[in-house]
Length: 449
Ligand code: PMP
Image 1: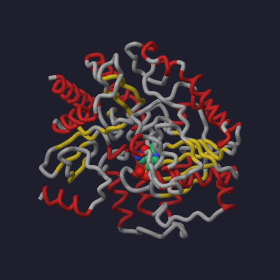
Image 2: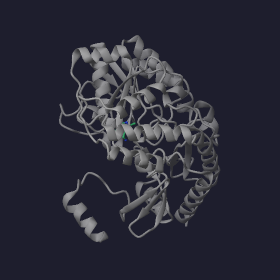
Image 3: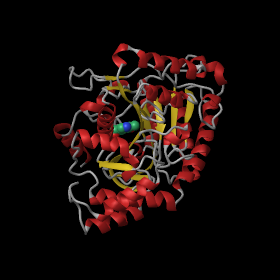
């Protein structure tokens, strides 16, 4: 049966979507932070379907809410109202600071960022949009212009992606002293290992200012940033950098967009939204992935003023956005995050894991860096701590595959796919972290042999 599945995939499914492992996993069931394959093997899920399972696979409260709604009403289209939509809007708005109170419901992160780009342009009457090197904001033709990481740096014929978007080379990461970024992990060689990063804030903000001043960027509409870059391998900005960047963009008349698709809903532990950990207040916030715990759902939240500007300029319509199923599920997700103190769990278990991984990093020369916040953690694999060259892809793949064979699923990230990404469901426990760290240690030992 397994070979039949592979054959169907080969014949009928997108060749662009890659299966992660040499022997692709065929997953049948999920329960909270665990996944089960066709042969009944279980895996601790530390990638959460790409940072999407927020409260746990098939969480009973979310399942119950979905089942209740399933028997009532599935779809109305966005030209009608229904109770789950109003209930959800009220709950989500309560979680955002003033004046971020107007919600647009859509279905995916790319759609959310597409809409945010339109809002920025409609509101400012400008055209240029700025994002960072290493950013991932989506894969639609419009957002591809914003995305600028590794393989996603596409060479599509001109006109296919958003031409007025610029991705300035202002953010390099990823090494840095612990005092340079918001992290409980001590770096081994502190600043000395990363002069570029430690002087980074000033250096990058100067580059950023230059970019804003270039002739192409005379009319800034918006600036997009992930509070921590996800796909790029969990990259944190130097402290204070985002705050200064926001100020510069606003001086030029642009609006600031926080892409919370990976960082939102409490995952970073200290705050519910990633932007709060930078002390900034965006004009627009986009969210997806964890918002629906795996059900397709996304949102853009903005100010009444920006919402009005959009409404004046164009009719925005989305058939499925805010459908009853998504809203009922979204409400249940918010309820679970609160009831089960999952944000606090991210803080506690995430800090525990960061410290455990930092111990491991001191043992293994190929573990270059451990970084992150809450339950969004990255491990940079290198040839050695002195060279800081990325570990070749096939070696990273082998470690990745070995972890999977021992029952641990990790994510990958970074320009060379050299980093591991650790983003488990927010309900993960310290005991499971101990198991995962031990599996990772065994895979590294196997690699050294
Ligand atoms: N923004 C960020 C930060 C993301 O990580 C992603 C997806 N990886 C997106 C936007 C796009 O989301 P989607 O795949 O739902 O379109």
